[in-house]
Length: 137
Image (cartoon, rainbow, N blue to C red; front, side, top):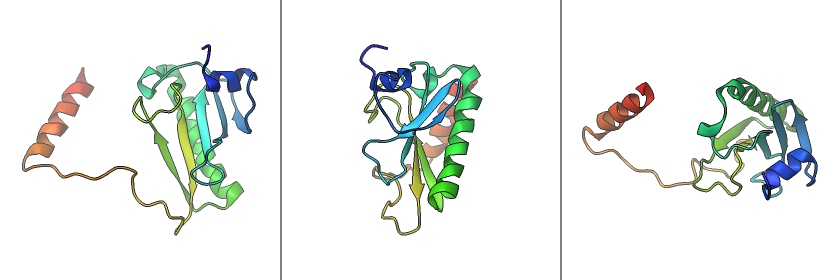
């Protein structure tokens, strides 16, 4: 897609520190990492959000994410990883990208990046029912 920096990286029109190339995905280091070794995994096909990812690409996408998470521990000595996808909100580039961030105890990253809330009495069951109904469609 014209103007998409991730599509430009995939095509070779923009440079990046590529760490993985497969037929359906490319992974490269984030230019502004949370921690050094922070990787972005993107599908080669331009899709904007996770719900847009074609079903035949899901296994390859998730398999690459697993391989990257393993590589962070083996290659960088990370104790684990944080894996996340933003869909539209807080998505700085409108091309699906999964963050794989190396983690170690005491690295300073605490919990999630947003405030927590609580359900009112009985409200949790309502939310669960609404999601089950949406998934059944």
